[in-house]
Length: 478
Image (cartoon, rainbow, N blue to C red):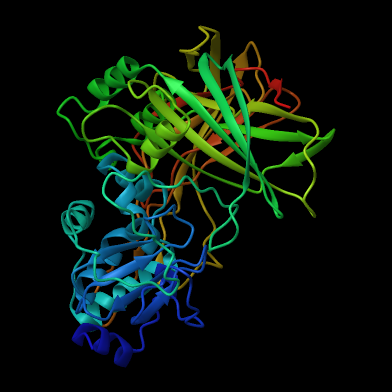
């Protein structure tokens, strides 16, 4: 048994807040034979284990992945696995890293900071096991996985990853969930239309006992994607965490392959709503190719020289229906568009705001600008939280509801910190972000900054404009 793993068991440290909890040790179809279970993430059957014949290497097993990507090596030994948890704050980033480029990985960490419970466990790992966070978790995992030999792995279900002869085309299989459930019945619809300024395809839907699956593909011009990468990553790769909050909002808005939308399926006149969705993307740009996404391109005969955003959307029903008529209604998610940042110092000041997307202008007039302190009476005694923030009240001309425009502090604010222990040890913690917006019937609006330990000398605000960019679109498929 791995020595660090033995130390962890003796220490009594519970890794559950980091996404590695003790479970029933249930074996899935893709669990390797000879697996020694480490823990479970708690969703989608994801679990971590050692595998007989691979020594101390730690593997992540993900039954929801597409064939053949069920099992991935994630750490050379258990000490490195713990160091990855210290760097990432949760196993989910480690498990999904194989399918992300560095920018996507950093974005996930920035948007999903460790919880207070996770930070407390990380403190125990540092103190009791004398381990420090992995310097470059994305680089470490991808270096380990590059060319890793999985050939000795045998699976609980011998057909989990069927072997194929050289040059043989892999069978296209779509399942509703995970496991070795029966594949769906493919119903070609071959719909092609323009919506949201994009070439959209719904090539097929799939009927299951559990529900209906709809595949959607959206095309993006490759040069548009290259221009986006040249703007935000001119040197090639860039860490998402290197950008401030305002630029991260701009990146999310400008990324041509991250268009957010919802789909409602209307089967035989009855509306079905999405239960879950998954997706991937294809870009014919070196370093951005995705093996799983290539399967979509090849199976549906899509143009390989274009960028594609793929979505697989699941709609549950109580019992299988014969699909006599089928329509799909697409609804764009509300876009959040950051404007030019500004600072103010007191009541009476005015600022001109312009929506960069529509050109619509507003005049903001500050009616009150005061420092406030949050009541911490019921907060955790072990942690010291930043409690100072600035509150700004203002009017807009022409008036706008909070759903149309609000103010956001460009700064992340200060991090919580643990109160000093007898040993003088301070841990690291998550970023404290406080966002409050209010509008009343009389046209007075209010926003609050992030939290700080000391009142900030000034706060840089950014107007954020909400926009419903496209009308709903409904198309008859069958």
